[in-house]
Image 1 (cartoon, helix red, strand yellow):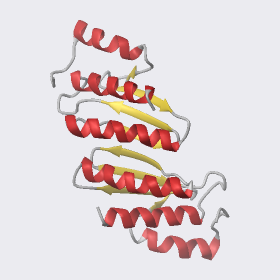
Image 2: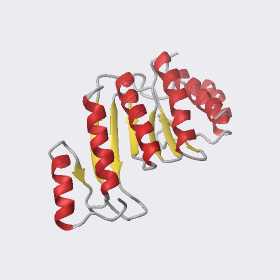
Image 3: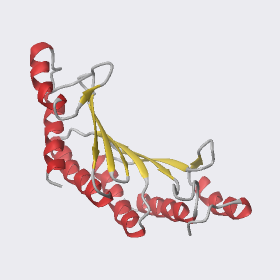
Length: 100
Length: 100
């Protein structure tokens, strides 16, 4: 779960996320996405649902909230890059954003 | 409430915040502070309390959370700088952080 994703395994895991608007950082060690909601209530509601999940998994996002937007960056610092934990958290965020 | 703070009024309003670790941005249009907690539970608990207050006042922070830290920037964009709304929100944040 905390092994760095590499090669074909990484490509396969990332493909569906890239199709959903996630992008890789220049160094390839993290993925980013900007979520936009209708208002602060929705943006912080999204963050709250994600926070509970992140805490349960003990894997937390780096995120910035400005009113109705939430910019997210995911990476597994212990591993020095992307792992399955980031993929799972990214999917959870997309799921949560779709149901706000 | 949404008038720009200027001159002595501004200095007086800012002084107690600067003493609590808030700093002015270079352009003077915002104030910043970095809050550090013991863990993510405390950091997000703080954010949740502040979010409810911000929503009630319809005045929201620009903030970034990375695990147990929360970096905050406050400004009143409609007014193009600092107003009493920012002072009130900053005080509320200090109060909330003190009671986590």
